Image (cartoon, rainbow, N blue to C red):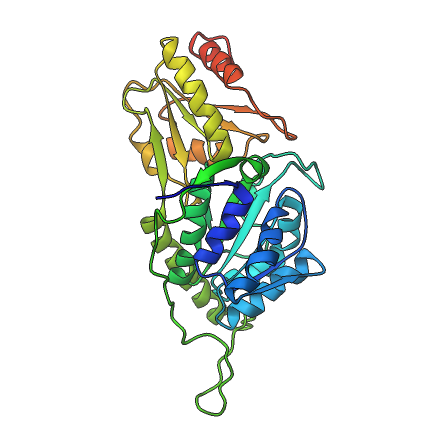
Length: 355
């Protein structure tokens, strides 16, 4: 099977077309611009539609319209652009519209920087829109995994009638790695078409998609139905990777490109006699609680490593439930931690020298 050397962003776009994407709406923002650039060139060749919107707000509402009409549609942006989309994302969740949203994260808050910084854990797992909703958030750590999760995101969106986040970052989006696109060829899920808006042509009763429910009992019932769906997703779709965990005395937790750095640190620590391992969430939501409930008896502490000021660490502490101390190590603003500094912190922690 052949492999192609590609940037992470380009691999995402190519995988989306392979996954059946027919409509893309977006607005330029660094560091994700290779995605709309690829779609502008390649999606029309595949019979699809590329449209550059006048803003992120316009893009998410175009996405809403196309997906409501049954199209396999997506958008992409980066951190502050995703923040602008939050009202539309809440609407998509409320009306159960299947679609895909890619966030190639950069540093914040505000406009922040164009440097890579996975500082969107809150936005990807807690949401910035109103109401009680959840969105599946897939977090790849390699370009290969980015492509595979991109294709899978459309399947999950159709399966559960929900928006799906693909959570990348500027480091992963800009790096080049070999990708094998024929490794996983899946049958594209058709989805339930009884809800889409195609025009009734006087042949059936008209359909309506709306998020406004003025009757409290009706809105409560809808919310409970959504929560039941989120429960099914949590039971069935939680994913994680365990790396050298069987005898770990020091347990790292990291996601995305940060986890790659942690793995290098683990190799270094084991060479120095420290048995370190990694729990890597592949879904940020639903968060993988299960591996923290069965931590090895050799475990002494958990270190949550993030390229932000500490966002996922809250979920890690909830999952650990006090069974061992949970520490946080982070760099922010686009500063990328070195494996050596993680190793130094870990060794100091084990000898009582780190906070």
